[in-house]
Length: 370
Image (cartoon, rainbow, N blue to C red; front, side, top):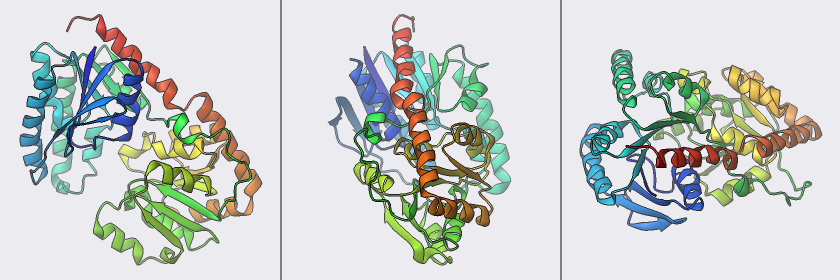
């Protein structure tokens, strides 16, 4: 069965789309194609990658022109099932349905709630844009063959709109991060780490402020949302204790996680974060790191329920500092928390288990008429 995944926003080697979903479908003997922006025709883990150039400046031009070019490429591929990953591709999904194709919409985020915090949309327009997009999305999803959601919260929203909705959590790949032969007494640095997109709402400001009150180093890996975000934290007390490493590849990430004492994921209490399942949380757990996380109810249930870390008020610098210092002062207890997290990932929070849901969905759609 020929499958074609489509993205207009993500890189061709995106972790969820390519390294997880597409690669594991290849392992399950599907013929997998991927259309992605700004890459050459290539092959990745057995995936046939088709690049579409994106010379368009601005979101509106990209949404209009790039999606047109992607649609033409999708028709050229002529797959049996199309699986798209970005809300701006909904019109393409609807066109492909009219062509008699089976179409899956992979919903990574609760977009209407996400719109409410988009800095590039004027404040006075956000609620209006969110309202109309939600109405449009709710109507569109009724016409797709299936929906894949990235969290149980998103699944709950769409279950009443489509009869075929599955939740595929963005958990880590065991074989990539979990090393059963890792030396348990590997030399740890007095450091905590954050890996991912860097911005104030993802905790950058309060994490840098908090590290000033501890005897730890803050290892920061990823890209800043923009130059202004970087300039703000560079002026904060605590920046002199930050080891900013920029973007790291997967092997570099694994090394830095193994030598740290805890992983931070103290996102601010924005609506689109409270019910999210950030991959970094589970990557920390997979490598045996205790997690210091925001005290959102869902996250508390995971962290405290598995006794694998500490939860804090993400807006309270003193609470974050105290949690970091506790880890520094109690390395054995922290290590035990890390082992609990690793056990939880091995038993349930892993991609190998989640991928079976996706493979089963494709097998189910194979026998369904378009």
